[in-house]
Length: 622
Image (cartoon, rainbow, N blue to C red; front, side, top):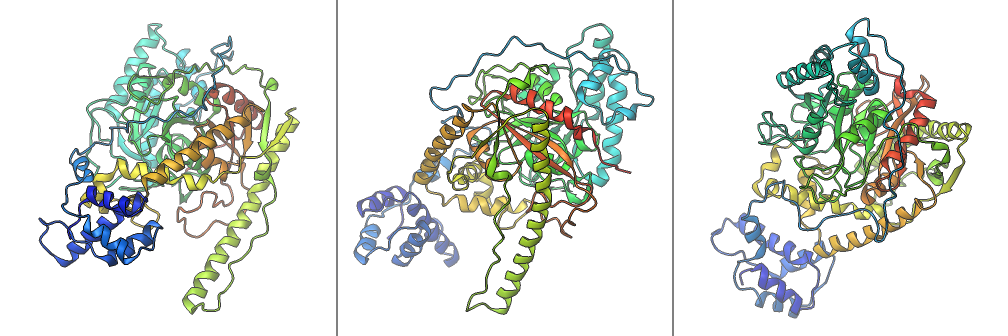
């Protein structure tokens, strides 16, 4: 009998089969069998009892009796179905689903902003002896020089363009230089500032955009093969807002293909502290360029670690805002319920100044909530309640090596021994890095902070992450269906092409169940912020997954450099581990905050940063 999706679904239901995955798997098996047999493609694919058994294994249901299988086959008549009708629409990446995720639990309210000042008092700076002396200056420092006319935006922009050109062959962080646009913006900024029309702390500051942000007149490649010449007719909202603030866009910076890792169609972006390593990703270029003193600041994005990880590797300060704080209009969609745009800078204060320019509704991104953000660097952080995730700082349990099995082959033994050696080396690096986490707690206590021990709610956060891949597979469904996924640079088991294919077998029912579990996560993680205002945590681990799912804001900041006694990094950076370490490379620390309390979070993180000074360190590039 021939296979019809709609009727087959009804037949499955009549046979007592409720798995939403099963029909899709079965149809795929039938279609593949038709392809391999080279039969007439104009005819519907045929289904056999054997295919039902195979589909049942993949769907985790059954087994079925011969009578049940025959009942299903008898219900199949023709091939018209809903999948094909929707696929004919050719939905672009910019079309969001008809549902919107809002991270706050039901009944929660946002406290009104305080009566805060806009900026702290600063000393009038001296002009730089030579322009490259300010390559690693903060946005605040650059802003004072520009506002007081101690240097020009044109000189600053030219310097950063020169550095981008000089170090790109070594670090591979540029997709497109926007030189003409930048020099025109810088010239206009100088004229406005000279006329007393100062727009604020970003006026005349050169910045770089992760190349998933649309910029009219320039390619927007998403870092992916097959998209090298893609362009859009309108700037992303964030680009428009930074233009309005007077910032100067000097480059579109790299990202791993379709926002995964640090490998893109032009190569691999490198870590300025150790160019033998990648910069991590997917905000690879923004993190590398900021750390290398090649832009004043950058805009990155995070879905599940894409600001946290490269900021750790490159020693930057990153702000992952509350989900729904910054509009994503004009940005590539990977996961509509998890994507977040945020600044990557050299200091916490820089991040706050940038966020102040880009946050708030734009009337297009329905996920954005009209919450206030008012940066107050003089907020009395000593009145804040500070917690820490105690078990994340505890000594980990002893490592249990994988044991041999009775039927182990020589090849399996070799693989097992290699995995054990890699796990042992990773534990040595983890133990070394833990001393920096503990030192941070000691530093906070020395600042007079009373740290309240907390634990992350015990929920299966990892089991909720298929939400991301399911949404990503939908966002790029045309790649999978057309076979264009073979143009992507990486083709391994963990890379997008395979992940997209696997996600097609994720049941609709399980997607909904995972979202229901996510509701519990939002409620229970949010409850922690009824006890404290800020939570201190190591950057990686369960909190990274949990807080991205729940939409809570995070600030990732440098927490020192590894010493000469640090364990040596792996000979090859596979991209599978974040903290591969090595002497002279940065470590990080993360602060979490309550929903839409990003300004309060930043005020506390700034206090720690000013007390430690690690953000003032920078790599030696020559």
